[in-house]
Length: 266
Image (cartoon, rainbow, N blue to C red; front, top):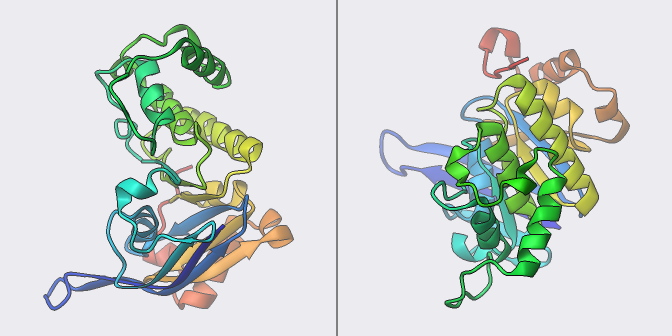
């Protein structure tokens, strides 16, 4: 479903602030793969997601999504193929618009838009059914302005909006980092359910080793622009935090505990 082949990305080339964020990175995802991505600050995780989303171009390499080479495709055209949920619950929604209006925008993402912006009866029924699945009672508050929702409610809504038209690829960019632990757990459970029910190919960045191990069918760890670990199947099912830290130390050459590059928020 997703092929990343020999990606390179360097920022501020030729200056004292030059920083290579991706170094000959290759990664292949099968349809339905749910891959968690973990690594320290500066490892290249966010650059990876932003490169896939088209936020900025890569210096070299290829990005192929469902057989289509999207390397040169601008971000707004990739939006029809890719759903994304950001860390900040305030992003990806229009706070001064009603809940149902936000859903209508998501439903029409990537489609040609005319002058008819009203929400149809059929769309309203669809939104009500989809909102019921969240279990938050939002199906009875569809005319409320999104800015009045709590952070957890808004992030759940954003997740629903990102998957309303079943994208080719779902990007979860530390989407629970700004939430309290109880709310984060609920949003992660919702993410698991939506991904499984729709068989969505997913990349999820997290700083939390426990979440990286617990969710998805595959885990990759990045360091200095490289993928240094790729764990799946039975090995991932039986993986512990201690195992992950030991594997990192073996490959990267230094201990996570002393370097303190990974933030584990339990």
